[in-house]
Amino acid sequence: MVHVNSPLANVADGVQLLYKDFPYEVDSFADFHVRLDRPHNHHRLWHPQVLCYLNDECPFAPLPTDQALAVFESLLNFSIYATIYHFLILHAASIERAGYTAILPAPPGSGKSTLCAALVSRGWRLLTDELTLVSPSTGLISPMARPISLKNASIDVMQQFAPQQTFSPKVYNTIKGTIAYMRAPSESVARMHETAAPTWMIFPKYQAGAATSVKLLPKGAAFIRLSSGLVNYSILGAVGFEAMTQLLERTLCYEILYSDLDEAMGWFDRLPTAQ
Amino acid sequence: MAGTEVWRAANLLMRSWDDGVIVYNLDSGTTHLLNPTAGQVLYYLADAHASVGVLSHRLACENDLESDEELDHTVEDLLKQLDSLGLIEPVTE
Image 1 (cartoon, each protein chain N blue to C red):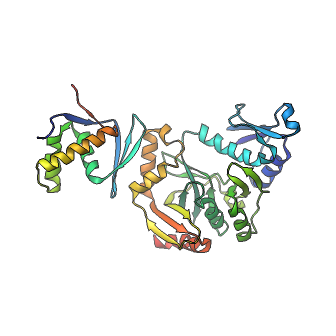
Image 2 (cartoon, rainbow over the protein chains, first blue to last red; image 1 turned 90 degrees about the vertical axis):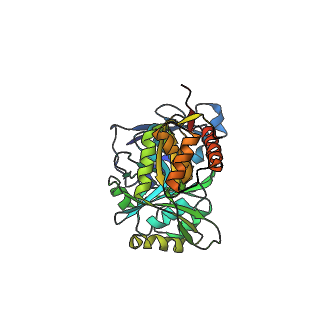
Image 3 (cartoon, one colour; image 1 turned 120 degrees about the vertical axis):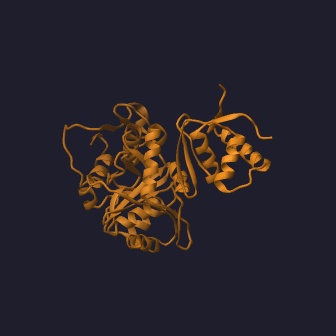
């Protein structure tokens, strides 16, 4: 539960658009209190800026007001990885279909979010796009079904690929380039309290012009690759190590190199029958 | 002549898989993937303190290898690497 406070119209419009299906309450308990506000100085007269606060602490430098929606999403990510220690947090997308769950860990630029957005537009349930929360005690993923963050060329790709989906306005000139968000499908939001058991760990890599190729990754190598995208592994210590090893023992690990979205999705669609 | 120094494993968690042994150092928070042989030696040291000679002999017996000076040198080099990674330490008492 997040308490949001902002006088900025683009934050209100963005939240209303992207979180339309989420339940909301007024004056209820909240895990995080986030506030996006205008700085109270004369600078705002010629360069309007946004300041963000998590529980009254200001973790980021001021940014232009027209980036407020991206700031809001970054602040939610920060709220999770800076304050949640009872989950192993992977920098990864997760999707589920018919009880089978794929975790897609990957560094920025790998095409993770594009692939995730394409798959959820074709019937996979969105668990999460950016941060995957794994319970160390049960090994299950707790979904969040927050919007999918698309960057640069992948925004137009997805708008053409899945015109039935809802996209936010583009946010320009952020540190990651141009960003737009795709709203999570309503069904994913409706099922966000259903945990999911991981089946596959799939490392996607987009490379222009590459033929689709897939290889099985040994678990030791997968562990090392995964550990570079772990948010709180070192903080969790022994608990984090055990959670990681159990996660890898439960999953088959693959690497998929692709440039053709339809081909890559076809491979994902065949995964359950390959089990 | 094999070194007589006795070694022990640091404060570690380990898990063995086909492509090697994942090692987590509880004191430093670092994670390493060791090849299966290096992992085997580290498991020996987690079992009991040992010198190069003892490790070399056990490695030879369990892997059907010749226990000779060359193997001693290989184990000695391996221990230097494990030491530099902070995964083992000399027993001083």
